[in-house]
Image (cartoon, rainbow, N blue to C red; front, side):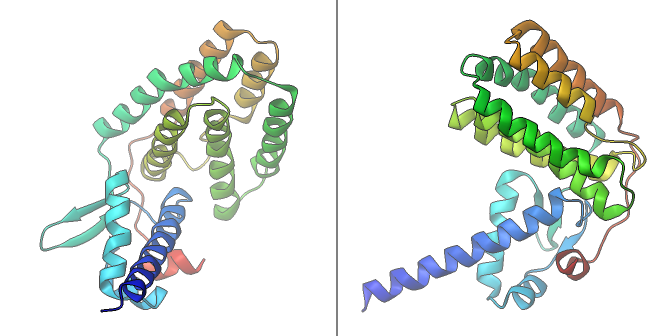
Length: 235
């Protein structure tokens, strides 16, 4: 038995499973894969040139994050959160994100402000643009603002929680978000950055709560149509 070769093969399989997880995760978050889309191991294996076992491992990672639903004898589907589950996502964000803001204020630097300002400049590029591609880019850039704040908190566990919450929020927005309005107000992000720079903890927390309320208020509870897996990954 060659243990070293076995370990190398196993590591290669894990890397490919992670690549599948990342590609599908991005497609879900970017709204290229709609909720309830069926994800077959055979098609994923064909698209990525891997075995069904490797494809299954990638799907299981996404199921652990809550982005994919595994059903016995039916297969895997992009998660299709109910209105109640959507409310739970935003209730969780209300509990966590004001705390994130407070943690950032305690260690905020001019360099952090520059990073956030650069992100908001990227976000502003898509606000006035039309079309599905620009819409997806705007939603991703908006979510990245929240993830950047979490990364500045100095708390890796908090950052991990936020990564999952933002991913689930994107899934909820894909299902219930109104296509004609911004899901995450650019002006509200600017106001939050201004409050951070002034180190006004109370105002930053209040702005964050108002901002999350605004995102949730933009949900219309109407499901979107599904997209074929191949089409979503090849866009």
